[in-house]
Length: 254
Image 1 (cartoon, rainbow, N blue to C red):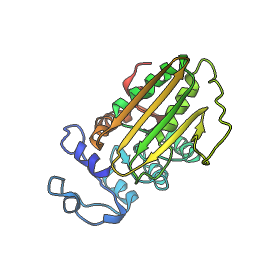
Image 2: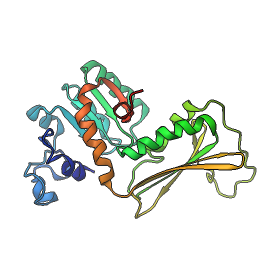
Image 3: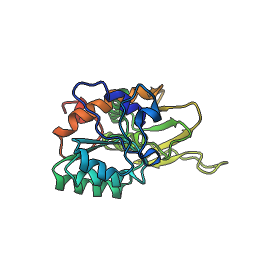
Image 4: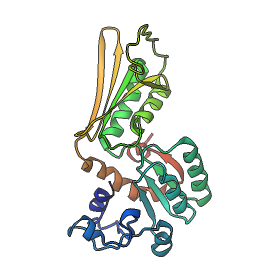
């Protein structure tokens, strides 16, 4: 995702790319690594030193759940706002990030999904859950994704759980021929994770009631679908404070 983010911001008049950090390509030219269409920036291996040198306003992190919290804390302690697109950051790490954000007076914006359509899908799921409390989530991603379920599915289940006006009808399966076949359950919502080559990021939420079903589905066909949300987050994170999850506050008034 790092290359896509660089491509998405490099020609924006109000966004200036000043630091690119990557341990595997430290010291190399960004143009040499990614191609001549990219700026001729030297890739930094040590993030902290780069932040001290350039003093950016915003750090965007698309790395790994084991590394993202350290990067966020490094930025926040320097008074730099953070946009985290890395999925799978633990609850304990988020608590630590929230404390650091409060102390710094800056924001840590954690976004499970930058696609505008995915944010709308979660919003629609909240509306549906009030009237159709029984539902299941099927999320499908590329085979290199490090975590399961996806951050989008995890957050969708939480929002459905909060939005329900009545509890779901219990579904009892008596015989299981394969362990785990009914998926994992979060906030009373079964979640099924698919990982296959050829996929990017896809999710459908199936609601069921007497005599009818409702399916809400979003598909990211390539990573360009995330870039409008990334640019929006970069532009607006400076207006926020503390830990913020999702793009909803940037898209909706309530």
